[in-house]
Structures are given as C-alpha cells and as structure tokens.
Amino acid sequence: MATYIYKITDSPSFKKDYGLRNQIRRAAVSIPSNIAEGDKRDTNKESVRFLYIANGSLAELLTQFEISKAIGYISNDEFEYIELLIFA
Image (cartoon, rainbow, N blue to C red; front, top):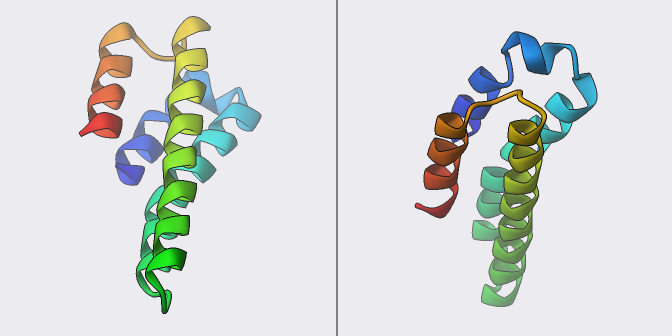
C-alpha cells in the first residue's frame, strides 16, 4: 500500500501541497513500520500496542485522503480504491 500511496501523491496536485503530501507519506510508511516493529518485540502486549499504533495511522491516512478528495486532489474512484486498500 505504501508504494501506491507514494505514486498517487506524486501527482501535480500533491506536489504543490508539500505539507499534506508529506503527512500522507509519513502515515503510509508508519503503518507497515509499526507492524514490523511490533512483530519483533519480546511480548504479545508490546506487539498488540504497535498494532494499535498502526491502526491509528490507518485512520489518519483515511482522514487525509478524505481531505484530499474534498479539495480535488483525488477523484472519488481513487478514494474508493484507497478505502479498499485500508479496509482489506
């Protein structure tokens, strides 16, 4: 998913909005990174904690793409595809 997010945020709309583009990319990278980090922790409690953090980043990413859709950076079809990726 993160690689797709990088590709979609490389569009001209996102290039002019560095702040939103950077925030989206950081959230997208944070998700698999937190899952990987939690997987390498010594306890189930720590692993679960990092899964919750990754889930929070997913919610952040969805919100950022809702904003992107509202301001015309992405189409409804692109947003629906991103939703499928997030909720799959």
